Image 1 (tube, helix red, strand yellow):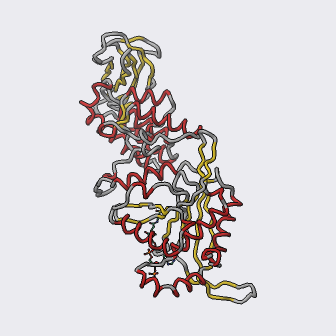
Image 2 (image 1 turned 180 degrees about the vertical axis):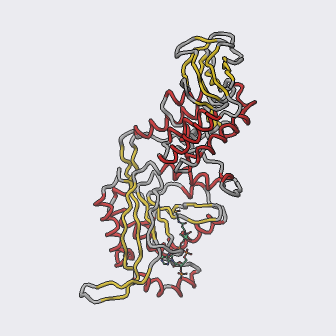
Image 3 (image 1 turned 120 degrees about the vertical axis):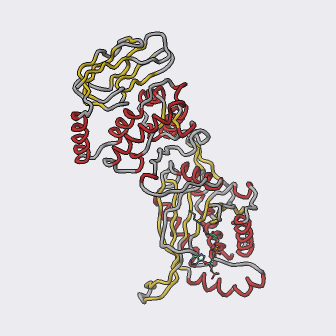
Amino acid sequence: MTKEQIQVPATGSDGEMEVIEISVEAGESIEQDQTIVVLESDKATIEVPATKAGKVEALQIKLGDKVKEGHVLLTLVCDDEAPGVKEKNITDTEKRQAEPATRSTKTETEAKAGKELEQDSQEEGSGQQNKNVAKKAASETLVVLDDLAEGAEVHAGPAVRKFAREHGVDLLRVAPTGPKSRILQEDVSNYIKNQVGLVQGSRFDHEHQPFGMQTALPDFKQFGEVSISAMSRIHIKTAENMQRSLSIPHVTQFDEADISEMEAFRQSQKKLAEAKGVKLTPMSFLLKACAYVLKTMPQFNVSIDLAQQQLVQKHYIHIGFAVDTRQGLLVPVIRDVDKKGLWQLAEECQDLAARARDRKLKPAEMQGACFTITSLGSIGGTAFTPIINSPEVAILGVSKAQMKPVYDQDGSLQARLMLPLSLSYDHRAVNGADGARFTSLLSKVLVDLRELLL
Ligand code: CAO
């Protein structure tokens, strides 16, 4: 057994540094590279790691002390085989397995092992070494963690960590924008700004935090083979929009419409459709029916501006519809749907969907929608919860129509073609009763086409 004194290392700072954090206690078994104290100079925050593993015999400093290079921080009792340390680690691991750790436990463990000695300006040089240390700690703690984010690594310099600590920010929640996925101070600032914005109801700052509360990912290679590819621009844009829409309080109202008559009518028009070179699918009927309901219930044709505490009522009816393309989801918009007939809607729908798939849509053709329809009807499923296309306040999801046994008004059982509807709406703009009224009216209109055809 030997005794080691751990001193303030060369930091590049001539002046005194204040002890702002003591990360270990007398009697504690510590590992090599674990942070023992955090010092603050007038230029930077420096985390001092243990140069060896061992048991802390005595601390030679206290909080607020002013120290310089060479100042003794603590005395360590070291053993070449460090049995005490091993024993302590096993006990700790067993204890943690018995009681699942919280995120803060993980953050603390990871933070301790991943600390860097040098100042922020010198970080990149020894980045790999620190990364390895952090990796080691992360894999040691993985066993006790129960979600993906818990296995994640955080790469951030001491000043950034201190800044995050001071503001109560969990770095696992901050999207890094620095080189090699490092979290910069401005990432933490932007995260705080976004959180404050969310609480105060103002807009999300997408320019600086495109994916909002993105948590750092674990190294998936530790679980098996992976390959990495870049996201397409459309995919990135969709992900950003979805993230923005996540802050909307969604409610989804489910309903069914009996479209047996509508389908009979559609089939009766097939020959004419062929002659016209147009495909008349349920989509044209849905567009027309939604336009009718939006006109009848204008509370669904608004956008809310919480920052200004205003409702923007639209007096036009433009409806977007989701198109599944190889590059990702696109939402072209059909203008003035209420003023167009079924054939014109079918033609426009077909043209826009084809150009979306050929990447020939102009940006203006994907703007200005009041409402969106997303149809998975040709694919399958019985219901889903569509995500509102902000700043719209509602979206209709349509699933596959199925023949079902339904009792009619006389109580006799009939085979009817039922279309599942899933309406998601923004509960800040629309109340639940209106949500149910919307789908009831929509079903009624789809059952009795006279409203649409007149
Ligand atoms: N129930 C049963 N059958 C349906 C249906 C429904 N709800 N909707 C469409 N169909 C049928 C059509 O009638 C057509 O059959 P017929 O040739 O016998 O008439 C067949 O399915 C194929 O239709 P389609 O897909 O070519 O045309 P569409 O107008 O129904 O849909 C479009 C067009 C662009 C909406 C669709 O092709 C598409 O891309 N859908 C996916 C949208 C999507 O990905 N949404 C998810 C967004 S959220 O992640």
